[in-house]
Image 1 (cartoon, rainbow, N blue to C red):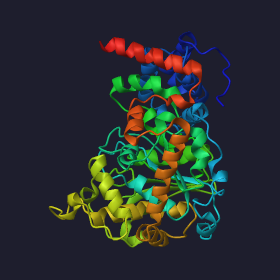
Image 2 (cartoon, rainbow, N blue to C red; image 1 turned 135 degrees about the vertical axis):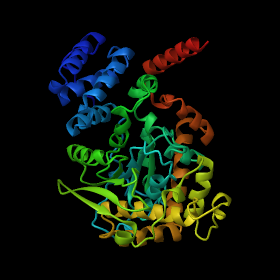
Image 3 (cartoon, helix red, strand yellow; image 1 turned 45 degrees about the vertical axis):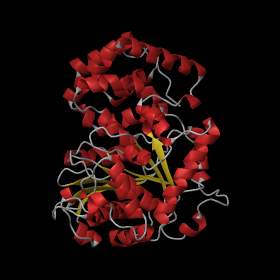
Length: 442
């Protein structure tokens, strides 16, 4: 639950915090930042739009938005205000007749049965294929419980939610239905806008600022499922140590923060990747290379470039369907640097292998590649994915009746919350806000 405030949340109380940040940024503490975020998350009172914009600008100019303790403070408040979910890892072992055989898939590894996630901060400008989402499904095919947290594209052609909607997934089932998903499949997707309704009114302010703020790096840190192990990609080397320390402060058990040397927020297929590894409470740094550490060929980033969500969905299905031929848009590359099926497959294997190592399924990256390849070639990854598609539809049907994936995608794109789990007063507030927006647009 959100922490209790020591003072009323209002534009008047926010003035003092804003003044302190602008005039004495060196004295602005993580506790001050947390109090500001409490104002942001208040649906009534809190801070005005002008104050939110001023704060985000001042915080960016101050440079303290890269302080791990400040970022962790922001993330803790947003986690507290997120829609709360059940202990999903505990529920995952209770499978029915149509459930996943965790008893079988849990035989390999160090015994970790908690949740994992693989996610990037975005903003790298490379517009690569949806590798983290695909790698997440591949890892789920080995029985690892994956609770991926993501949204629609902000800076690329296809975000994780865009891809999944193009693959007929239902993403807007109520959180109370989440415990019914993992017993049936190890893959679960939490669509970010529906778990952070307190942030809906901040989005218009952020869009008007036209520069990256602390909010742009918080997404990977506020997964409501609170995975204990993670692979997290950053697009700038200077963010690596910051994110590793933030994960440490958020009590993540084991993690790899990665940054491809080309400025890629994934493990790079082209060459070396910087790594900050969190394990046993300590952070160590290193570099990894596709050939030296994974036994895979290198590929230029242009060969793993993504496309529209619809075409990426064809690539996804071809990768995870045993014996499938490359889709038409990848079957005849114009040149060695053009997007190709082989390059994208190796890109997925790289990132899946890293998550398998962090999850404790394997001891080395090479073993991770082989396990990931088996998940893809045996059809296990696709079974995990199909299980999520069916379980998501069932959860939505039980909650609201049959809803087509395109319909819930439309609801999702509006960035609000799904009415099925809002309190009555929230229904009224959102209806009023929607009416005001319509009147302003006339």
